[in-house]
Image (tube, rainbow, N blue to C red; front, side):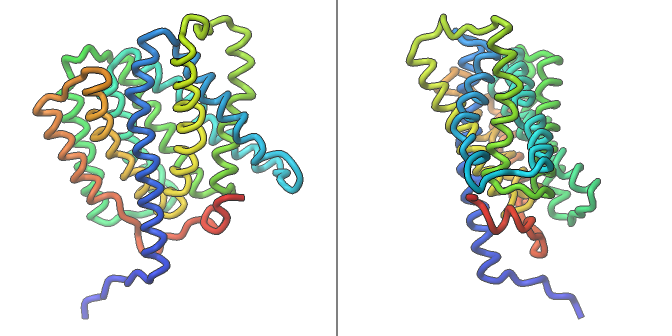
Length: 313
């Protein structure tokens, strides 16, 4: 007799529903980040300013989650947080921001989020996770779509060095997702450690180096970047992505994030006047189809106890 596919109970369906909701929130914020950061690094503020605002403000806001009565973390947690901070903290932001200076918002939003689920799948496979034909097909379709999108943007002035920065960012982001799903930190703790570690290392170097261009920016520009980089990106987006990874698994959550090229390309049109070509629209459709195949969780996948049961402490 043919084996029947495993049924999903109500709790599992609810968990997937919440995972998709958290993914959607992270998706909206991250999609806008590429256009917003591209606008900044080609204007009055520098790459160094963007990173400082993101990790500095985020570190201040999330520090209470790590210190205070009853919130002491063991050294192992701080060590794991340092690894996560390297993967999705200041080094990641520097890589992507440098790539944005040398390419375009559409290129960056295509390469980094698009290749991230492929790297995540590869890393997860190396640590024992296996995928069925449907998900493997989805990853192959995503890669095909990314290739089409990069080809469509071949005349945008993008450089090879800029593309390599973006590819490195994709690998770092994927390593973060896989490491997070196999760790022992809560979603809030992981987000806080990323920002606090990054701020502790980066901000002093930034202040001593004299590379700041904040003096040449208006108060309105700085306030907007504090809100977007420091609050939405460093606090809301990281927490939402962490919850999505906890509920869907790293491969499925990162596959959904591959939809960023769709939204980011649409946002780059009114914000940066980067009009997508017909081929780029076809590529976006291909990526969307790939995500539909890849972004699902195996019924037997379960998040680590810490992430799954204690999301806000």
